[in-house]
Length: 155
Image 1 (cartoon, helix red, strand yellow):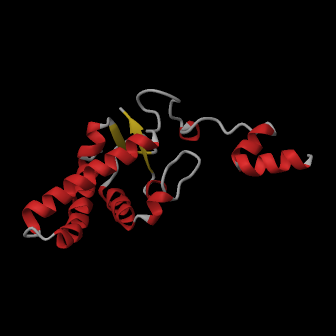
Image 2 (cartoon, one colour; image 1 turned 180 degrees about the vertical axis):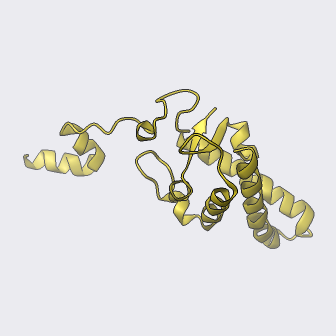
Image 3 (cartoon, helix red, strand yellow; image 1 turned 90 degrees about the vertical axis):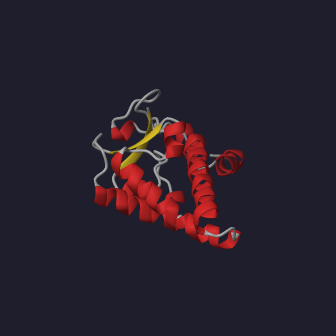
């Protein structure tokens, strides 16, 4: 490997360098037995970010309108609690939050079934903490999904 290749691999990242060496990573969700595209495939990050934005905005709206007495600072604190309860109850029962439903995303167990209540609780707690949700694996599953043995898929 000459100097240009070494610099090029550093600039393009370790995945691109490994792929140039012939390593096949496969597609997102392949190791989980999910299809590459369409229903049942791993939901794209853009949709997932949009869904969480919708859920947070809904939580803020509820907190501001019903619980904070018009105080924006208190609304943020209440919104976190509402977001947690919203996530726990909706993902634990129907498998999606309102934002996920609008964007056609469902949270399922890696075995293909619905999440149990303890797993939905663990996932919601870790989601509210934020840090575990932004640590991803190669299937773009956050640590909160990995620990709860969950995956977000299209439907």
